[in-house]
Amino acid sequence: MTIQSCPVEVLDKIFEYTAYSNPRNAQAALCSLTLTCSLFRAIAKRHFIRVVCLPSAVKINLFFDWLKRVVESGDYGKRVLPIQHLAMAGEGRYSRSGNDAEDKAKRDLHLIITIAAPSLLTLTILDMDNDRRSFYSRRFMTPVPDDTTFPMLCDLIVLNQGAIHLVLQDDNEKPDKRACQHRYPSLRRLYIPSRGGGALPSTLPYLEDLRLLDKEHRSPPPREELGHVRSLIIDVPGPKSSLSRILNDTIEYDSVFTEYQPLINEVGNPERNGIVFPTDKPILYPERDLILSAWADAVVGGEGCWTTAWAPTGSTTRVLLGKVEQNIGFDM
Image (cartoon, rainbow, N blue to C red; front, side, top):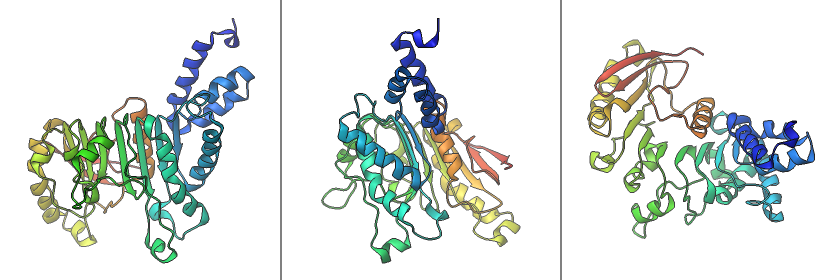
């Protein structure tokens, strides 16, 4: 019995597994199957965009042009199953100058997200933000409309991005809890910056795992707003200067932990909580490859970045787990 003679239902499950077996390269794996025969091509096409990873502006643009044709043909959601897992990353702080690819990606990104929103289970957006050049060139990113909802979204990572307004506001410019709950009714795990997104967790009653990126050592959110969270992890940028590293960061380190320790000890399960503090160099932004790997891990049912075992690489990192401090060394 050859594989071509297997029932279509069996082949469909095999191809579905192919897309999930390597989330960051799902399209490449399925492309090779489309070259085998017409039957394989039809089945592989069904799963071609169930899992999508777009790690650059060029790939975002190519995908959008293809997706637009699929939607216009009426195949999206029928012959081509809708997107369930989506990760997109731009050049962000690595870009030295604006270019046409970045500008197009920033214009079209919201359309990809809006099309995928009804079926998304995981969403990661990294390094897709307006920069200083946008002010002078008048080429700003178009955000996802505020009335867009994500009814099935469980895992959300949004860092250094301007595509999604994290906290929706009412007419008095205060967080609109009802609107946020309506937008993310199924959200369970969240990784966001503390600035601009710190008010969001309190609006999500089903949120379980929360990770905050605190680049500016801002005040932690009030304890009462996080009473429903199962685990809390806070990333702080680490030493600000060479002098602080020479002094072993003692003053800065102690102040950070004094500020956050009550939350770490009291919110959810202290054994799952932590503060990540790089001690040998400042880390203001999460690493692209780590973030995309964390997204891929979440796609296949792993812990993703919602664990204190996940920390910036290339540095020695102090992690506070409840009341227990650990030193973790990483080599790259």
